[in-house]
Image (cartoon, rainbow, N blue to C red; front, side, top):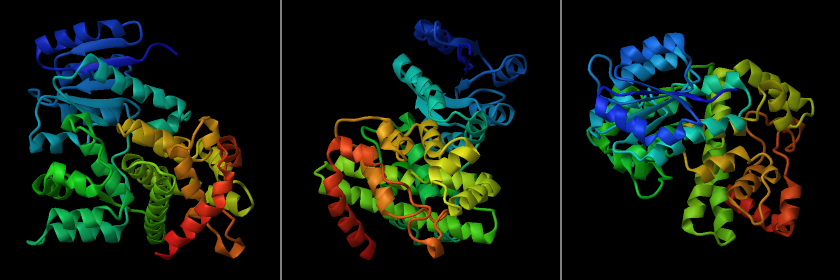
Length: 405
């Protein structure tokens, strides 16, 4: 495989020249092209394939949002990055559907290189090119219809508030993921990562979020069969139970607030891959469920059908969206944390234990065949390595307490 090919687009010649100078040291690693218009970028894409497109937002003729929307259609596997000097609400709304990540000008060479490198490094997490293209071209995650329409109805009420919005959003994995993707981007230059919807709603502002929901459609309702929509609701409930348990275990083990919230966030978002597969590949999900019912390990069955576990699918998407490295790695290694050896209990381990103790995923659970069917296997090698096996009884007791609350 040759060097990754990156296309940079900006209507200001001085900016393009500055990018060329700033990234000169990357010529050994990347094959780069620089053009001044969206039309020129698309013409070049007719003759050369590109792995990533980095575009300015405001350009005459075709702006960055229009260009990246067309890039998504023509090359769904390409990484799409907006690099813009504008921070008004309208710019935020125009770019939210088209870009994987948003960076603010001026942007250092190191930050720009790190964002693109991390996106390419995700290929090691997800080996399937077909899945990578599916995820890179994804327009959003599915929300249960009842939740989606409750939010739409609430936003039209005169008494609607940021707190009320957050109360609805924080009960839905897809909405929370989409909101955190946007507000945690480098575009907003926040001093610390957000993990809760209320924080994100306050960063965006009520009016901007209202426009994103009602005009742009940042969230979307699940459009599959009604029984599948019920599964999405069950995945939500299950995810938030695992998240609360992960945070509980982190507190029990003496981790600080930041780690507790990252563990909560990783456990809650660990199901995004399952949401994508249920939404985009329902027939294959049914094949996995049949294999699990016949006695297969859920992770092995997913690997056989999809070429990856739903944790790896979710980690790839979260990484593409620029989520915190600790959260992405925790989701990627959640199935078997011993794959990434460590000398002490970490977020991946906390989330793994929480996910195991939370019980089988709603997708694969078959109560008639016993509570063990569809359950994620406990990585005892990991716990033995860290000398934490003796804590399992205490953690199980905590899970039982959380389940009763």
